[in-house]
Length: 343
Image (cartoon, rainbow, N blue to C red; front, side, top):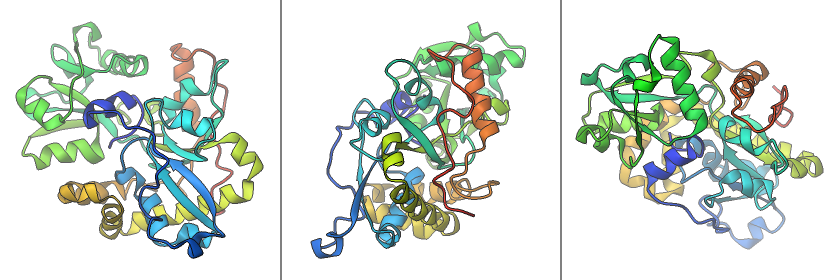
């Protein structure tokens, strides 16, 4: 699945081009009259990239009137090159979409950004490595002597190095090729690269629909440290402190949207496409992605959005140990479950 993380650069390649930050509403609320919305409080949400099945619950909540019921009118915008973290941190948007790995460098240091994760969109990390089945890259060690499309990011390379070495492999033998991938299926078919970091709920499905036989393995299945939260909803900390009731109202409506999407994948996919017409050109992929990802929204958690402190802290402890952040991340830093609806 596409999102702004290791991953912002992955998205840049996959989607081929930067989006310009726009304050224009995107989907959901454009058809309402001023009399319908004049008393509603506006909340702006900045996506991590273009609308996709990670965001379905948001569009469901808009379309089905869950936000309006809470006295809110939601405007959706897309990020500049700086990403949702800076836009939310600056207060131009109250909420946004990010990821635990992306957030790490933003919430430490003298220029730290005042953001906090308030909900997990998916309960488990659905990213991993895709490759041609014929190459037999069934585990990290198999990357040796093969071409891996790298974005040359410290967290990306540290994760892969640990996974290769924990199997007894030699990471120096992985051929790191600067990524120019804009279409995974095409890149694998042409053999310009042999392995790519992707999200299973989108790219793997797309490759198989393109007729490509592929292997895919999850990072989370190989090392529990890498079952971190990606993607997540973030919020501006100052906004949360000044508007706790409004923030909880927003989260209640958002939760209802994702609860619906978890139970009704096809209907939710239709809502996503109705609100984002450009997705209709790829209906088959959207339906398949939604079928997969609807099961990931809640999964084994007690409710949608819940962030397990132990899992959150495990990944940030690993970043600390590997000196992948400029300052030490503290226990429980960067997230809260406080704004989720009571069970």
